[in-house]
Length: 378
Image 1 (cartoon, rainbow, N blue to C red):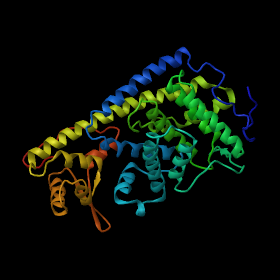
Image 2: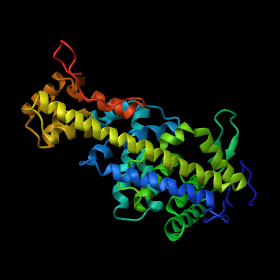
Image 3: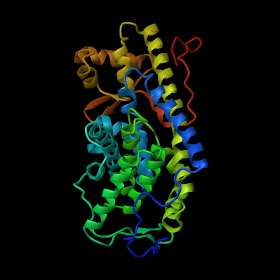
Image 4: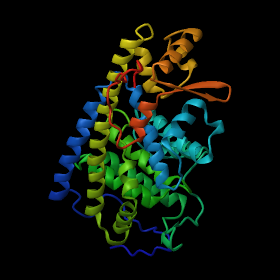
């Protein structure tokens, strides 16, 4: 075991693959369960005809949770609002979390044309931080326990050494195809966090790379696995297991943790997608019933793609010209599907049921029903 001191740069961080059995019987069993759950998620996503409904929403939840892991606290509702209304009036935490969502989208587009690499990581981190980032050149980076203020880890120092370790990281990602991709993802995530190649943004960059790797490996079509939900609910264990790999070479508990995260998150996200589809069906049926002149499949999809919708969105989607678009959205307000809200000089039309579905763990999807003696639908 390589000697480790938390206050000294860990320049002897071992290269990959680690000299242990990465695919023990227990790990392989967990892999099967996680891959089954991930495959179900991939299939459920295909049931939403317009994938923009998922691409525009679930990554926002991932952005909020991944940022919260780093104590950058905002709400999903603020993020949806800032994403649609523009972030000029948003608070700093919301702006930073929104950049995470942008980085995920840009990374997704990038890996469609080139493999995951150090350059991908640099580009993602730059998007997250909102400035040009590069591999650390100066010493002095250390991870500190927020409660005790003690140094718990000092990553390797020196740009040349960091680039060498990142080159090995890339080689492991692409060159060890005989290792299950979910195991490779767990190992690559630890190694990236241990290399800690940037002065800031490493955690969020590493979690973005997890999703991009799963897409590159063909296990996801789009970046809709809400993986940070599990990590933030088990934050102390997440950091402890990372530390245990460094100090004790305890790879199996770490890999099992990440496999459990994939399985549980896949199951949660699959159910969330099913609920989204159900709410879309209920909304379409209701609008057809009480406002048939307004109904179109494109309009229903739009208010799910943009839960904070503007008149301009309807126009740009070629659903209607501006005056008619305004009439359509106001009609959806009058029948209780949307709520109108003023943001500066512009009006936003909020989709409250959908936002509750996305942000409320206990929300139950139900059809619109007519309230007794009122004539209004709820």
